[in-house]
Each structure stands twice: as C-alpha cells, then as structure tokens.
Length: 289
Length: 324
Image (cartoon, rainbow over all chains, first blue to last red; front, side, top):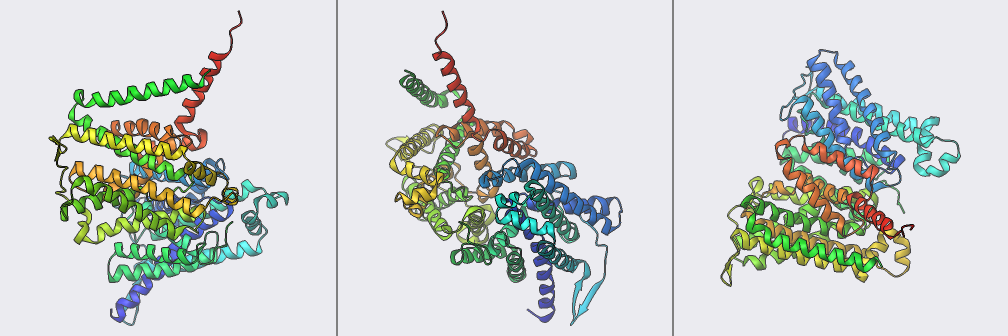
C-alpha cells in the first residue's frame, strides 16, 4: 500500500467511522432510555438519504436545506416509531426488538414502492473540491460527515451533561421509576430520545447519500455494522459507542481496501465476538443485572 | 368433565390430520406435494425454534443452523460419498455443535446485546459460505447433491416416498419436542424464562440449560436442512439469510409461543398466505411485517391465544346449566 492509498484509506475510514458513530449513538441513546433495540434504525438512515435525493437531486433544493429536511424527517419517523411501537411495548425488550424487525420490512417495501425497486438513485455531489495532500486527493464531499459527527456527538454529550433536559434523559436511563418520582415525564423523555436518534440517523443518511447508492436495500446493509458498533461499544454508553465506531470504521475500511467488503464484515463480527467473549457488556458498557 | 373430553377431541383431530396427510399426496398435484414437503421443513424449524424461545433466548441464527445442516449433509454426501440417511443426522449434529459454540461465546452477554450478537455471528457463518468459494461454492452454492438411495425396494428419490420420509421425520421430531416440553427439562426451561434468579436459586444450572436448548433446537434445525438439500439436490446460500430468519420469527410470533400448538398454527396459516401471495412478491414483506407488529401490539399470545380463548369461552357457555 503506497502513501497515497494509505492517506485516502485513512480519510475514508474517518468518514465511515463518523457515519457509524452518528447511527450508533442514536441506537444506544434509544436503548439507554427505553431499553429498546431498534432494528429499523438503518431505515431511518435510508429515509434521510432518500429525502436528500428527492429534494436536492430531483427538486433542486439547496443541498443544506435538503439535509436539514432529512434531519426533520428522521426526527419525525423516530417520534412516530416511539409513539406507535415502543411506548405501547415498554418493558418488553423482546417484543420491541421483534416489532422493529417487522418495521424493517414495512419501510423497505414502502421505499421500494415509492421510489422504485432495483434502481440506484445517484445524488450528484454539491462540492467538487478535493484536498490534495502528499499526492493523495481526498474529495471534500466524502469527509464532510466528519465535522458534522464531531459537532453532533459533542453537542449531544454537552446536552446530556449540562442541560436540565439532558440530565433528565440520563435519569430516566438510570432508573425510570425514580425519575418519574422526581416529576420527569417518562413519555416525553422517550419521545425526545427517539427524536434525537432519528435526527442523527437522518443527518448521516443525508450527508452520505452522495457517496452511497441510494436503494431500498440501503437500510438493511447499514444496520448490521451499526449494531455491531453498539454491542462492541457497550449498550447505553455514548463514549464507548463513539470509540467502537472509530475502531470498527478503520478495521472495516482497511480490510475492504486490502481484501473485500465481505471479509471486512466478517472481521468486524469476529472483533465483536472477541470483545464480547472477554467483556460481555461491551467496551464501556455497564454490567446489567 | 371437560378435560378428558378435550383430550378426546384433540386426539381425534390429530389422527384425522395424520390420515389426511397420508392420503394427500395420492390426490394432490405434484407441485402441491413439493410445497407440503417445504411445510414439513418449516414446521420442524418453527417448533425447534420455539424450544429455544421457551427459555427466552430469541437468537437470530436458527436459519443459519438450518443452513449448516444443509451444507454439512450435502457436502458429506457429495464429496465423501456418505449415504444420505447417515449424512442427514451428521448435519444435525454439526448444526447442534455450531449452535452451542455460538451461544457459549455469548452466554454472559445480556439483553438485546445477545440478540444482536447472534445475528452478527450468524452472518459470519453465512458470509463464510459466500467468501470461501472452494468448499462452499460461493454465491451459487452447491449443485449435484446426491438424492436418497433405493432402500428395501423403495426409491426415496421419488416424490411420494420422500414425502412420507419427511412426514415421518417431522412427526417424530414434533413428538420428541412435545415430550421434551413436558419433561423436567422443559419445566426447567420455563422456570428460567419466567424468573432466572429464582430458577437459579432452586438449583437449576442456567448456562447448562441454555446450551442444552441450543443443542436440541440446533440438531433439529440441521435435520430440516438435510431434508431440504436432498430433495432439491442443491444448496443455495440465499435460503439462509436474515430475511428468512425474520420470516421464521414472524411465523412463530404470529402463531404464538405460549403453547406447543402456536408455531404449528403459525406455519399453517402464515406459510399458506406466503405461498398464495407469490404474485405480490414485492409488497409481501410489508404485509408480514405489519401483521407481526399488530400481533405484538394487540394480541401478544398470537393466533393460538385467540383460538384457546374461543375454546374456553365455548366450553364455559356449554357448561352453564340452562335455566329450565
């Protein structure tokens, strides 16, 4: 591997890590607050990508406005799923998990019927610039997700630690009963968590739509790596998940570049199995009793 | 007395069903006989999955174990020339081993981390079939797998003998699972799923029982794979992906997991809908996804719970002495 390929691969790995982190932080937030796993989270990402496709590529909206709309759509879908599935099934982890598996089917068919099956929807790149460094050229569009991920996750951490509402979220995650005794409205908190999760998936989908082929199968492809990131990082831990996103983003990208995508996924799963065999709760997870 | 009465009805229905299944292939179209064999395989899969579900281990690798059975049995028969009827149980044993291996890695992982990790490890196995073209044939799978031989003058590669062979295997497996559920082991499984701490304090070894459930369930899933592969004469890795796993989950959940009859009803109803909706192949997943969500929200016991409620009600109405 020469220096140019190495630099380009590092840039790609950074972008993939940022994307994983945005998706997985939402997953882990929803898990922390509600103890619910959302298998359809990859489809939130896909909804963001299709929003940008529809508004920016088809209707010529400005790119940033389209991404903002993707954030909104993601948040709305998150709220709808919270209200329709997670709230009625609260306390039943298995039922919530299985119901979102059904939701995957529903989303995929919906997108396929609306936007066409088997079509790759290309989204043109709004920024053609490329940074050239040591002979390696890295397109601006490809790495644009990195500053966004840092800003969003950093903002989320600040929100969770220094804002009343964020602290209320953490209180619900620790002990819903005690939190509600303090006058925290649990329903409002779970709704907030799902809205944030959906918005983060929406922004990731919107920004990555120019790089990925937007198809109805996109959500199904993205969900397994994201879930692996959450399990490795430790369920419910934003810091752990971010760390795991970086590790797995690099592992995945380097193996993909050196060997192929299938092997990369296999290596990611093997890393997960290794981590879980040693630390069953994930890198930074708490021991759940 | 309503209990012996109910038992009589149940045995009557069972005998009628078995006689019906024995007569069926002589009157049905060849295509329907093939479909019926797929039903038997799904019945085994759903019922063996339910055994694992009674202990509350909702793993997502069951369909991959079915694939392990199919690959093992097919490759043993094709490459090593092992007789088909010996290769099928070896495939089951292999699936059982793989299931135990996966679960023993994840024994200490709790909650949905466990479910996700089972999905991941299942993908690892499935992707290795795609990745390693040399023994597993890559994305095209394996073809030219031997059909079963002629035994005692009956040619088991023909349709009707193989139908009876799979019917027999299915009935034996269902009977064994029925007995296991009613044994001490089955009670321990239920105790663990209801209250793990209490179960552990009464001396039930939880990890050992979880592995036991995996081993038994995996063995039968592997047998189902063997049944499939020696009828089709080929193995296709696409049969064993997560989508198939989710369909299995839907059949079991919609049928209901509370009793032994739930998955049987689930497969009978849902797989029939699945077969009949072939023309709508693209929007079909939406219907099944929605039906599972609605069942989870409004009918957590599945279709089976409706039927048992209806039966209980009918019995109550019948037993009320009429005012004369």
